[in-house]
Length: 84
Image (cartoon, rainbow, N blue to C red; front, top):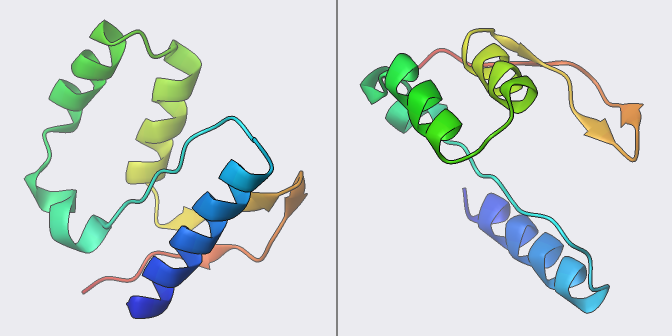
């Protein structure tokens, strides 16, 4: 777990140093997944101005067990969500 914090900090520091625009999104599904009303979250995201395309992408992330990570446009190994 500590490794994740260190990696996130390095990524954030690198982005600041290179003056990159963007955001970092950290999700911990094991702690929050069962406590979220996904329909409510979608409504809130819509009211906050998030595009339908982005909202569909997020819904896909929370409704599947497989994730494909892209780094500089290249897909890494597909990840399977763990069931605790």
